[in-house]
Length: 113
Length: 113
Image 1 (cartoon, rainbow over the protein chains, first blue to last red):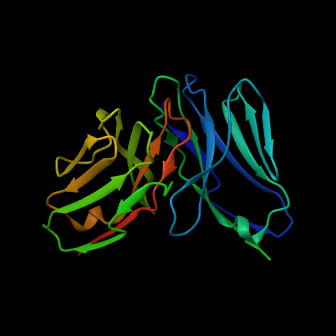
Image 2: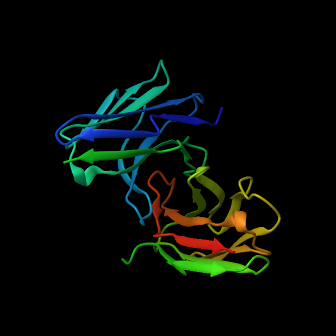
């Protein structure tokens, strides 16, 4: 019940295209859903996050869509750029967990010029 | 602020040797997390602390692994004795308060021969 399942494992997109990464969770106690971005040789860094009281959050070219009834959330990258090529992790946490995050398995995104 | 500091950045050791990884979190962050990242298993949470107290060490793979946080500005992860299957990148991350945003260090790449 603590798992967060992420798909696809890898994604190849042309420059200017839309990248979509999906995650599903089972624990209804989760109340915070961040996405982390990791470049080679670096630690993951927070990209964007959402709470279940809203269905969508947008920051620049990055949008999280959240479906509470389906227990799913997704990351959309509009106008994908080669500089977006990285590994993306979805995660989830709950209020009583001291900030402990349950991470998905990651998606390697490659954006071709 | 310099961000989360980890040392060493790279460690190559022989099987059976003791390895100590170090982490200095961002000042004011009272939650600290240790992760291990491999291609096969992704990003695994090993242990986390809140206000220097270990909260959950269920992710520590074996008794060969131990972690300490003697004060708010320093934590260690020790492996004794090390084995080739311990080869991975080890990250520490810090968070403030409830800890919604985790700030990762650059990681230590451990190779056990």
